[in-house]
Image 1 (cartoon, one colour):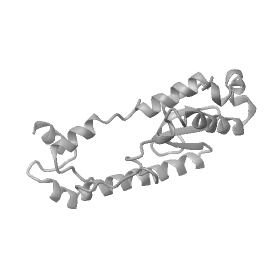
Image 2 (tube, helix red, strand yellow):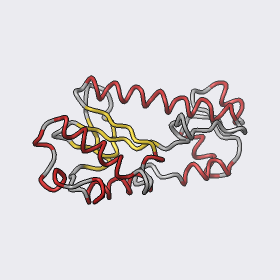
Image 3 (cartoon, helix red, strand yellow):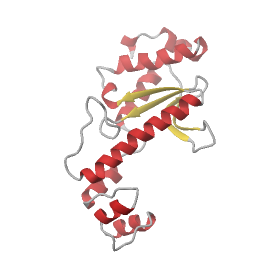
Image 4 (cartoon, one colour):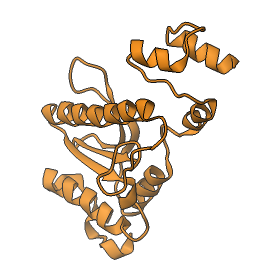
Length: 185
């Protein structure tokens, strides 16, 4: 309960308020069960398995990049990008199928829809705004779904990143990645 109290206090919510009342008055929807809060706190923000797998494959192919890098594109808040090729101005974002509503694998939760629907819709809307801000700032944006970072699809995903780098100019692929084939990833 103390964790819930500190969370409510941090969000400026009355300690006596219950979750459904908070959802009506605040912009942020609150989970109805402590178990959901615990699971969400356990979710990693960075270095997820799909991110690490893609970074490893890109590194093996010879690509060099920055990870979890803040990109400042305008006067607004900096955008944290999963994999960044700063000189090429290529931003690679690895999206989870559930959290970002993948058209193939994204599912709408059946319980507590008043909490999950707005949360997931905000994630998708934030993705659109992020893409727009990066593109207006001159960046190429490549979004990769977590199901595209499986061993069977990894070569194709690495090729897509290398293709984006190649379109930015011949100097953006180093010697090793220019000579590697998809079968070597």
